[in-house]
Image (cartoon, rainbow, N blue to C red; front, side, top):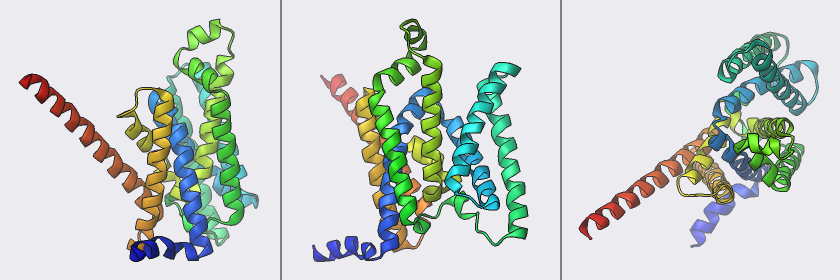
Length: 285
């Protein structure tokens, strides 16, 4: 018993590891809650696009000398508006517009990063795969405040967001500003992506948005229950992944996502097994 407690407490003796653990849990919970809408509304592609676009904002922020949060959020919001403009004005499908905008902006980020590496001594690759151990106290405050904003908004406008996104025609007839509410969800998704990039990286942030929520969707029948379960799965993946990365000396972002994926596989197997068992019992009866 004492040995198990010692294993749990050992990483927490170091300030930077304690900050990393708190950041991982916050990111896991925030991504999971927003991810419920991402999974149910099929927004995974746009979530991935925002993560890649945010990277370009980070590169611009480093080159210009201001906070990477500002650059990433500005880039994500601008990309979201750009996708909407291309869809409405040019007449292309949303998926096509997303592909054009995010690939073009991400390519710009790659070019700017190459220029920045020659000009400045900066490590921008950590934002591609995540470096949760680099989280500072001010980063932790930024993640906490962003999480409070995202979760608070989703709770306060739960009925409006649900109505506008799952029955927009009736919602508009009822007088709700459907367009504004859809844009609000996109902004909340942008904020979530931006605060998650440092923890798990551009490449893996989509997994934290989708996998815990998809796991919850296997067992939940209503959106509130799905959100609660998604947050639990996301938090558990963050905790287990953090300790796995510490003791196995593997990248934290990858470890967290692998644990989230393992949870999905386990729950899917249990759900399928329970269904097969029920069918077998019904056939015998």
